[in-house]
Each structure stands twice: as structure tokens, then as C-alpha cells.
Length: 39
Length: 532
Image 1 (cartoon, rainbow over the protein chains, first blue to last red):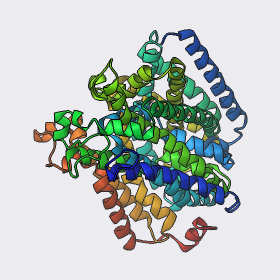
Image 2 (cartoon, chains in turn purple, orange):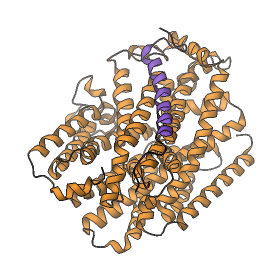
Image 3 (cartoon, rainbow over the protein chains, first blue to last red):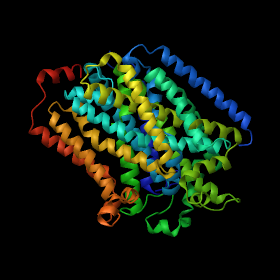
Image 4 (cartoon, helix red, strand yellow):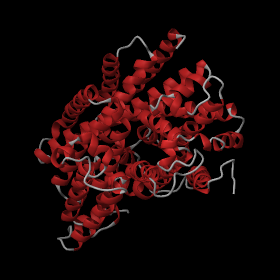
């Protein structure tokens, strides 16, 4: 399977995981914006 | 550089901004808490950018970007680990507990957190000593890269002068404003880095006809892999190296695991979690940190790999990046920037690299000073009795650390940059990571277990580098001197990074020794884990 012009699953998986993990960070940060204990 | 005046103006404005933020840090620093952990009241945006900018040095952009031109896009596994381990696990799993336990124990440094958790000045002193002895090698590598970069940008500036001026500028604001000055300047430098790298990615994909077209052009170069590299397992720049080959082991064990996992136990990064006032700030910082790291290493690795497609299809070059740079991978990214991008971007990228270097160096100087001043001298040698002049002692420690770093900067070869970075990251992981994780997550871990684990990780890594891992054992020469050969092992062990063996071994020792030795008192454990 070729994704974004890359034919090795070992590489396109890394490419997509990088983007997915950064998106996870942003979504987590927004959803938990006011969550957390005080000092 | 065809407009040295414009470049000089940009750098002067940049240095004025640094001076202003350094002064703000100085004005807001009133006590030891401010100087060592920025008063535990840093804004989450500043914390995330400071963490990222400290993590990413010039070698991560230029050195590892060049490595991506060599290995290909498989290096993106390191970016994934940088975000998954370096941000998600570091912030959400380690960071929150580090902040709470750091507050509970009033810890000001990473070694102090470990020392107070196990009520051992020896653990604090030994950790501080490891940091002070080995961090200068990593700091010198960043220093060398920065001075070489300044020397090639301002062709009239001598390397030795560049190294000295660069060091003195950073030393001034680190000494005056402590961690507040470091983090304020880091945040500004991180912002510049973000803009520079995002612009670089857009330019590169546009130049090569879009995302898919660029990747297809790179995939089409598989037949251009040099025979020597193909024999080592290179299958093309859009493919992973052949499973189990020398290149595969090098990519997976040293670069991906060594640097990807090693980030979790970096003292200068772990202390960042103790600078915020609640876990709410850590939640808010995660988003900024994740996008920042993607924009740093992700862009550097993609652009590094794609530079092959640019150079090969350019009528002036007609060959792959490694050939254009005459075999020196550190020259690939600068060559690509100078050839493919407009002059104004060359200046922006120069500022990006200067920011990456200064933000990493300033944190290294601060961590080294705190390690020798507070952890070794004040807490281990003086047993914490001489706390009245804590900041002054740390400042002397910073001066000592910088002095050692500068001497190494003049003595070490330029080729040491990537190796020194990998050694320090691997050494920190094997020595500190099991104990750090145990301190935060296992109430049953003992002082003896931590000491045994640290010694196992530290000595094991040193011996592996001296006698097994061929790249270092050959360069250091002790194995050749004692046994008449470069390494005592056979393939694949000669290319397996010490972290692969020593990190699990250090963790096993921690568990086994802790199971059979005296536990820390229940009252102390309750205090450590209060509100956790």
C-alpha cells in the first residue's frame, strides 16, 4: 500500500504517527485545559 | 552571505531581546527558589517552549537532519518517540508526579529530588557528580557546533573568538537571572525556532511540487543508493534499512532508542516540571510541546531526506545529498538552505539555529552549576549546613562548569557532536531512568536498590562504550591499548547501543535489590506521596 507517495509501511506509519501524536497533544491540552490540582 | 550589514542588524536586535529578557529574569529573582526552579510559578506556554527549546539543539536540526539525508525518512520513528516519550509520557506520566513530589520535598534540582526521596545525600551527590562530569561533553558538542556555525556565517569571525563571545553572552544572563532568565529567553528562542522550521517545511514541499510528489520523487531515487550503503542494508530514502543490518541496528538502537528514551531522564528537562505551580499548567503545556517537537525534529528529518530529491533533480548538482556535501552529513542542511531557499530565509534560518544553540547551552550551564554547586558541594560535601549562600555557590558552580566546557570546546574534534549527544542521553537513561521511575511510582524501592541500579547503569554504560560499541571503543582507544583490538565483541553487539542492554539491566537490579533491602520509613513515604 502506498500512502502519501511512500511505499514502505514502516515509513508511512511513522509519518502518520508523528502527526497523530502531535494532534493528540493538542486535543488533550484543550480538553484538560481547566483540569488539574492546585499548588 | 551577500548582505552582512542586514545580518548584523538582525543579530544585534536579537541580542537586545535576549538582554532584555535576561534582565527581566534577574529583576524577578529574589531567592534560591527563583534561581533554581524559577519560583515554581512559570506560565505553561513558557514552560513548554523552554522544555522544547532546551531539548532541541543545533545538532538536532543540522546533525540529525543530515543523518536523515543519509538514513532516509525512517528516522521519523525518532520524531514519534520524541513526542510519545519526550512529551506525552514525560509530561503526563512523569511530569505531574515530579511536580508534586518536588513540591512535597522542596527539591530544587533533579538530583535533589532523588536524594530527598531516598533520604540520601550520597544519591544526590553521586547524581550531581555524574551530571557535572559528563554534561560538559554534551555541552561542548553544542558549543562546537554553534561556534562553527557562527564562524561560517560571519566569515570574518575566528572560531576561537566565536566560541568565547557565544559563551560569555549566555553566561551573563544565566549567572544573573538563573532559571527565570533561562526560561524567558528559551521561550523567545523557541518561538523563533518554530517560525523558522515551519517556513522551511512549507518551502521544501512547495519546491518539490507538493507532499505526495516530493515523496514520490524521493522514492524514485532508490536506484541511486551508493553500493557501499546498499551493502550495509540501505534500501532507499523512503524505506527502512534491511531488518537486522548494520544500518538498521544503528538507526533503531542508537538514534531512535538512545535519544528517544534518553530524553526521559535528562536532568535539565526533568527540572522544568518543578517550575509550574500545578498540574493544570502541565496539561496546558502538552499541546504546545507536542506541536513544537513535531515542527522541530519532524521537519528536520523530512527536509533532510527530501534534500536528496532536490539535489539529484537539480541540473547544477545531479547527485544525492551525501555526494553534494562530500561525505560530511553536517553540511547537507546548510547546503540545501543556501541553494534552495531565498536569502531572507537564510537569515531567518541562521537565527533559528542560533536560538536552538543558545537555548540548549543556557540550560546546560544552569544544570551543571546547580549539580556541582548545590548537589555535590552544598548538599553532599557540606551536608546542607551551609545554605546561607546557596545562590552564590551555584553561581561559582556555573562558572566552573562553563570553564570545563570551554576547555573541551577547544580540545574536542568537530566530529564529536552527534556521538557526544547520544552518549550523554544514553548514560542518563541507564543511570537515572529506573531510579527516577521507581522514585515516582513504587513506594517499595529502597535506597540500596537505587544506589545499586545507578552504579550498574553508569559503570555498565562506560564499559560498553570503552570495550564493546565499536564507534566509541575505536575512537577512545583503551580497548586497543589493553587487548590489541578495537572491540571485544562480534556483530551485532558492536553496533548495539549500550542503552539496549544497560537500561533493562539497571531496572532489574533496582527491583531485585529493593526486594531484599531495608525499606524507606512509612512516614517519609507518606510525605513523599502526599496528594499523589
